[in-house]
Every structure is written in C-alpha cells, then in structure tokens.
Image 1 (cartoon, rainbow, N blue to C red):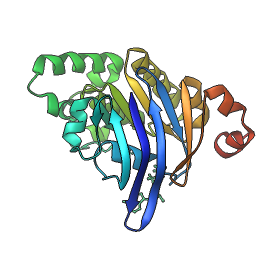
Image 2 (image 1 turned 135 degrees about the horizontal axis):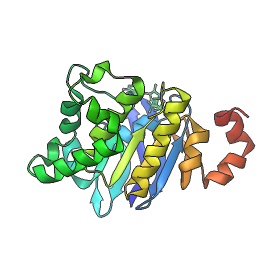
Image 3 (image 1 turned 45 degrees about the vertical axis):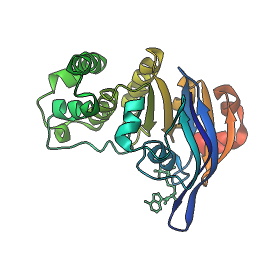
Image 4 (image 1 turned 180 degrees about the horizontal axis):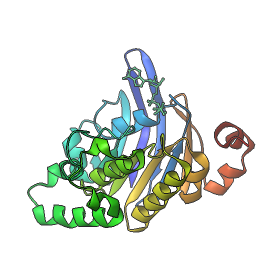
Length: 235
Ligand code: ATP
C-alpha cells in the first residue's frame, strides 16, 4: 500500500499541501480530482522526492519515502509520469523510453522485457521508435511518457494529468490503456481534471481543494454528488 499521512508541503511561506491523508491499496486504480492549482502535482512531486515535505509521511510498504532521493524512490517501485510529459524532444522515441529504465540498467534482460511490453501496449511507438519524440502527435508523446514511466518497472504508477491537451478520441484510448496497465497488476494513482472519464475507470477517488482532501468515495458516489458534478463534470 502507498499511504500519505498528514502530508504538508510549502513553497516558501505558501502552504500548498495541508495535511493530506490518502492511500492506494495494491492493485487499486485511485483517482485524484482537483481543479488547476489544487495541489495534485504537488502530491506527486513530493511522492517522487522532487519536493521535500514540510511534515507528515509517505509510506510504501515498510519504506518511508519522505527523505529518499528520487532515484531511490523509483527503485522502491513508485514511479511518476509527470504532467506535461517532459520528454526530450530531440531524442528518439527509443532513447526516451530506455532512459526510463536507467535505474535498472544492471538488469538489461528485465529492461528488454519491459520495452517489449511497452511496445506491445503502444504499437505505434514501435513504428516510430527512431523518430525524434518531439515530432510525434500529442497523444503519441503521452504514450512515450507513460511508456518511459513503465520502463522504471513501477509497482505504483503516479500519472499526472495524462489527458491534458488531447483530443476526445485519444483521451478515450489513453484511459483504456491506463485501465489495462492497472488490470495487469500495477497500482495506479491518477490525477485528473477530466473527472468523468477518470471516474469511469477508478476503484476509488479523492477530491483535493486548496491543498486539502475534501472528499473521498467510490466513483458512483462521487458521480452522483451534485457539487462534484457541478465543479468537475459540468452537469
Ligand atoms: P495543475 O493541474 O494546474 O498543475 P495542481 O492541482 O497540480 O494543478 P499544483 O501544481 O500542485 O496544483 O499547485 C498547487 C499550488 O502550489 C498552486 O497554487 C500553485 O500555484 C502552487 N505552486 C506549484 N508549484 C509551485 C512552485 N514551484 N513555487 C511556488 N508555488 C507553486
């Protein structure tokens, strides 16, 4: 289980996360809903060791992630796919993917197996493996970003707004792939503004507002909640 307990984060004097407590059980697909600036990326960046928590803990199994270096966190099995993809646009698709497996470079057979799995999940990337990542469409670049995270051999995948800027049909395909990744055994924590599509594939969800978790529930309960519908679904 990945468990956040009373997590706080400051940017200077600004309290961006204020006592966040939430968890994802092994095998779950948990969605984190929130508007722009609510704190979703801050949670992920703290879990990945990019930002240092001001208080609280993030435990994965028996390991405390707060205080670990990002590379150590990847080695525990907690791997982030960042918002905005953050690819190396001039490098080939293949190079971008293999960089995701850098921490596991001493186990090339495992990296090769995962590369084959990623290319099976996203066959278009096999066709475009030698093209610069920056020349791909937005949806294909998002596939590279997810594939690169998969190359880190995640047990828990932190997906930050994978649908951002994509066309509706591409978003649908993206959510199908995320569901497949989860069904193949990877725990997924998915931050999204596209609430309807995300809740459709979620086991559970949290809502974050101004750095605080304000609601938790199963997707049906959240979809039936008027305030949630108004704020995130537009109905
Ligand atoms: P978005 O979808 O827009 O990325 P978010 O829910 O991921 O939103 P965060 O990026 O975590 O939100 O931002 C939470 C708050 O912290 C916002 O008010 C944001 O302006 C602020 N913030 C984020 N990063 C920094 C930073 N490096 N320095 C100062 N403030 C920051």
